[in-house]
Image 1 (cartoon, rainbow, N blue to C red):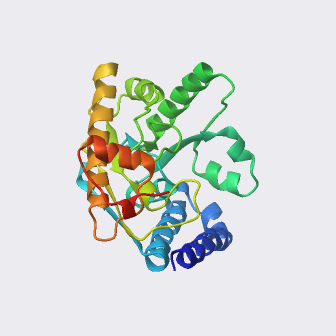
Image 2 (cartoon, rainbow, N blue to C red; image 1 turned 90 degrees about the vertical axis):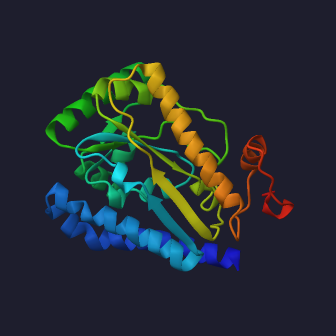
Length: 269
């Protein structure tokens, strides 16, 4: 049954993406940018609805009261494709930094550039970071936007050791806006590089914003400590839920470090 529901969801998810991209194209490209945001937000909501109805996976996002007015940096954990879409409905005017090559893809690239995202050339890391900071600062000066950046860069397994990159520290220091950490363990239910989608409830929380103006080391310490503490709590809750998802080795190791025992049936192989 798990395989059938996972297959059905994956088919419905990608079919919905293609059909909605075609259906919404006239409205999306003829509307002003702020109105065109309705399209990706509607798609994100409908994708989460499909996940709940087909795969049996609910999404529960709390901490909305912690989202500031105006511009800020949103810093989610990155474990799954889920965390690239789940927060969109709650963000007024999201801004992403993405590989320049994505803008060259016909149709998809046009959708991206409509929203004035920040393309980056990854040839030289230091030059790329300076260019990104300059472009982001200019965009935030024009509009109140919310930069979404994943501090660890690539997707990591739930419970894995933190590997936060220094890039977000430079962005924090240069942009002078608050940073909202986001904790979750979505990778337990929508794992990276895997076909299966597990039932249950993905819980995520927008944590209290870290104010601008802190020393770089202090900011990094707070970002890691506050995010990881909340993720640990979600991991424990998931492990002790009525129908826990399989725990990957990284999650099992972290739970043991936290002094939490789990059954053999909960261990992913």
